[in-house]
Length: 377
Image 1 (tube, one colour):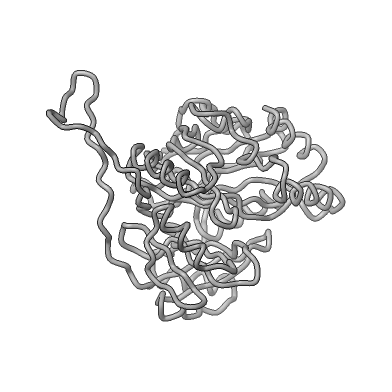
Image 2: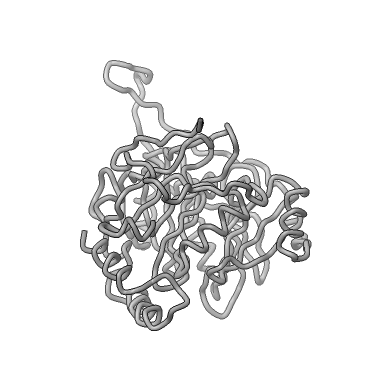
């Protein structure tokens, strides 16, 4: 008898139907522990650092061609930015449990173990997922020490008074990033890429979303967590969605509490940066969220109070709708949904035409109809 049970969350109360995706591999090659960091290229490292500090990162390493941004918790940097001719996301790095797992993965893939630069330390296995996106799996990296954290406020709730003769005055200052939480990627070969991450990295699905009226064609988005056994992990470390192009969607970084997130947002607004969507609370993952555009237009998220699941929960299933992205908060913005007129939406429109002409991807005319229905929901 299965020990797994479906989580009965708001708007995600249904589990899989017979024959649907189980959301995990039977015998994965390894089970990664977490996201280690994300890698980008940008032509302007100075502008990246200015935004990074306003967003709440600290600089852990910098030279003429490379910038490392970190949170307050001990570990590796959260973001690595290298100087490049244009701005682009170059891939995620996942943390292996130990050296033996990394060796097992290298042997399975038939690739070499290589040393990371001295400013990071450790070893990496570099490969490509079925979408062609570069993926790193690392171990043995230098561990940065903890930095002073932002202390969550003490709250009086109803008749339960814990704060007497004291006021609440959160400073309008950057919300100190504690750690990297997750990255969201879009793929034209979503189901193939999903299976690759489950089979090679041992990730497991927390929630599936499907286009309304197209459940029989399979899911089109998945929120995926690390399998740490009985130790709870973030509801999603990686999220993947089907789309007409393979690209970065957004990344998310944990802060102390709602006040840190909101006051940090006021600081970003005063500094002239653009809020994409927020503040609200998600359904899948339950995080309180606030989305911003960085100095080069990449979408980044402050979050707090996210769900933590162990490995006993099977996936929830729900239709994908724009209104179903949040329990409360403003409606999802055109900017967040990628339909605001501009370079990003124009590039996606070109990608739609290109994907529909090709047969080597999962984005067809039926999926286009489903995507347009999401945008109008």
